[in-house]
Image (cartoon, rainbow, N blue to C red; front, side, top):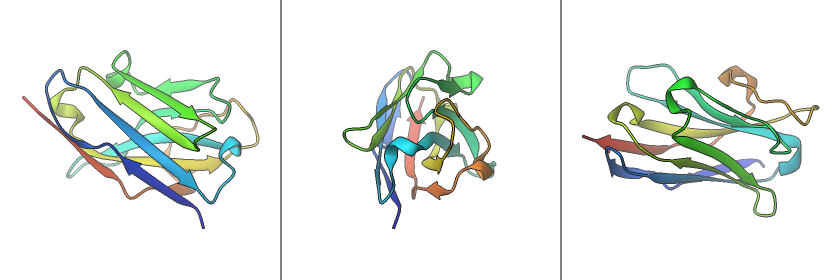
Length: 127
């Protein structure tokens, strides 16, 4: 049974930092591309950042480039999202997602391209 568990959400002030973690179990971590998505109230789920299965390739939505960093640790079966210079518009529920991919450089940005999802963690940024 595949399980993705997000931790590290919470509250921060504008300009602050948070680090999200996504612990994966029940899957072969090295075969899966991973990503972070977020969903604010009344809005669609949007891509935030993705990382290929061998960590050689990353992709970010424009609004977080230069502020967020995605990474993964195969020894711990865990993916991370380091968020800095947070803004109130970053407020959302953040979800991690995973999908097995044949190519080591694949990063998918469409939520429909992911097979497994975590339960989400709330990030609230106040001004």
